[in-house]
Structure formats: C-alpha cells, structure tokens
Amino acid sequence: MIIQAAALGWALLLSQVEGQEKAPQPETQQAGEDSGEGSKREQLKDVADKVKAAPEPDRSGNDLTGLLTPEEPRPALRYDQPILCTRLPPTKQVPSGEYRMQCDPVTRRCLIAPASELDSDGQETDRALLRTSYCDRSEASANVRVQEGYRFVPAIAESPPGWYRDEQGRVMQFNFDLHRRIYLGGAWAPLFRSGQGVEQNRVRVDFGIQTEFPGGDEDNRLHRLTFLQTEVYLGEPSLDVTLLRYDFNVERKVPLFRITTFFGKPRRFDVGLNLGAWVEALHQETIEREGSELSVLTWGAVHGTLDLWHSPDLVSYVRLRAGPSFERDRTHGQNTLVPTAAFEGNITLDTDGFHHLLFTVEVEKLFLDDPVVGRALHPERLRVRAGYELILLAINDQPVSVVVDGRGAWRSDIPNVAGKWEWSANAGLRASLWAPARRSAPLASAR
Image 1 (cartoon, rainbow, N blue to C red):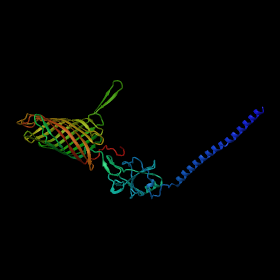
Image 2 (cartoon, helix red, strand yellow):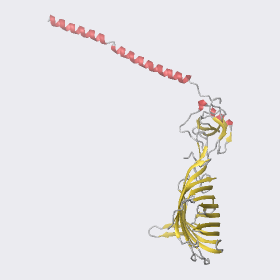
Image 3 (cartoon, helix red, strand yellow):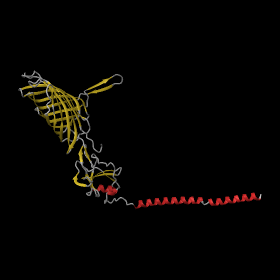
C-alpha cells in the first residue's frame, strides 16, 4: 500500500510539472499575432504617407504633362463634331502649346491633338495640319477644363470622310471616286484576227474627263458627263474619240404599276421602270484594216436606258440601252441611220472605290446607206468588252491603277475587208487626277 501510494503521488506531481511547462505557449502565440498585425498597420501607414507625399497634378495651367492620360490605341477627333483651337501648357513634344481639342462633358475627357505635324521622333514641326475642319478658337475654355479636372488624352487630329491621318498628323486619302476624275493611261494591246497572225506591237493611249452629280427633286437621279473620251492605237493605227457623252439613271419613288393579288390575304407588288437617257455628240472613229481605211463621224445619238439593277446610290448599274445614232461616213461621203442596242454594266465592287468592273455587249446596223464597192448593203457591227480596274497606289493622293480588259469586234462596214472576229487583250496603267472621295465615303474614325 505504501509503495502504491508513493507511485500515485509521484504521477500526480509529474503531471503538474508538465502542465506548468506548457502553460506559456498560448502567451507566445498571442504575442506573434500581435506582432503580425502591428507590421500590417505599419505597412498601411507607409502607403498612406506615400500617397499624401505624392504631388498633386498641377492644375495651375503651367504643366500639361501631369494631366495627360494616354490611351491605346490612340483615339482621333471626330470631323463631324465641334472642335476648339486652343493653347495649352507646353510640353517637350509640343512647345508651342497649340492644340485642337474636343471635349466630352459627360466623361470629363478631352481629346487633344497638336495643331501642327510631327516629325518621326514625335516633335512638333512648322507644317500646319492639312484638311482639317473648322475650329472655334477659345483659350478660356481650355483653362476652365484644366481647373475642373478634365482628363486630357493625346489624340490624332480629325480628317474628312475618305481621308486618314497618321500619328504624325499627316493626312492621306484612302477612298477614291473613279467616276469623277481626269485620267491618262497606256496599255499593251495585241490584236488577234481570224486567219491572220497576232499583231503584237500594238499599244493603246487613252484619256478622258469624267464627272457625275446627283439631282432631282421628286425622284433620286444621278447625272453623268464624259468629255474627250479618247483611245489612240499605235502599231495598226486607229482612233476613237467622243467629244461629249451624257446619261442619267433614276430611282422612281412612285411605281409605274401596283399589282394586287387576292389569293388569301391581299398582297401588293410594286413594279417600277427606272427609265433614263443616254446622249452622245460628235463621236469620231477612224480605223485601218488590211490596207483599207474607214472614217465615221457620229453627229449624235439619243438612247433610252432601263436599269435592270442599280446600287442604292445609283453609281453602279446593269442596264439595257437602245436608240438611233446619226452618222456621217466621211470616207464615202454619205449619211446613215444606225439603230443600236446594248447590254452594259458598270459596277464598283467595294466601298472605297478600289475595284471596278465594266462590261458591254453592243449591236449596230446601218440603214439609209448607199451601195459601196467592196461591202454589202446595210453592214453590221458587234462589239463585246469586259474590263477590270484596280487601284494600286496613290502619288500625292492621285490614284494609279492597273487596267486589264478584253475586247472583241465583228464588223462588215470596212470596204474590201470580209467580216470576221478580231480580239484584243489590253493590260496597262492609268493615272487619275482629281479623284475625290466618294460621296458615300466613311470617316476614318468611324472605320
């Protein structure tokens, strides 16, 4: 019993000693936690001290650099919205402080663009920006926006529809209307004739002036004018020149026929005839074949047109054309009446005017002609043509395009030359002057 009591006492004593040794552990853990929270509080305090110590943006009007908030990609001013011409505090890149500014009071954001072009290093030059819109000069409004805390975002100046401006402020045209231009071109034009060799040393030089303009109050119309359309072939000489050509097409607002069907619910179908006119004056054609020459002067031609399809702006079309022409056969000294029928199209394939497709199938027959030795009475002509024009580049914003087309002709009006098909493949370049942006050209900022 004495031994058992002694063992029990010794066990109780050891348990008390171990409990005393482990008791300080909770105090050590609590001290560690207190130490971590203290370091966090110190870090937050340091951040707050740095924020307080950071300098506020200078809105005194003496420093613009601190107010700039660049964005990527760099935005552009809108050509169709009001713009201010103002003076802001100078920077290293724009020491003059002259800017074009466009502000949004809702977002309190101002787009600013230097009023002069920049060099390749982004430094201001003495070249003023070209093709900008009207701006209202106001320095007071700029100072007010500085004080009101507006953000100033470096931007690119505005550009008109069909034009693009790069980050140096240089403007360039990206949209072209090849229906309004003065053009000059040249092409290699080899000639292939049935039963004969290929005429390879044949080239073509062409020139013309084209324009068009909308008009009409009741209906939507587009008027076209062509002056001095000229084609000169060298190698086997021939000439084709037209002094004046005019035509118009139309989109009728009131349909010609209103057809109603009563199979079930009544339905109405509007049928319109978009009839136009085509007029030509003083068309001279001179052609040499197999030692024979024919010179024909068309005094005038009056044709009606029917659009089978046209684009909403009437620029592109596919149509039928027919009517009489009055010719003077200068070689044989006689006047003739020439009825003509044609199926033709002129299509711009893209919104920027880079791709053009042209095709024509035309049939002519001579009447009221006198007999001529070496040819049948009432001779005929048949012409087919398909061409494509693509703008390659622009020099001083004047487009240079590649032109390819194929042509075929069958005619029996040349004395002592049997009617036969002849084909020509043309490939060359054409330079256009005064080719403005299309009337439907978008803003570069909108694109």
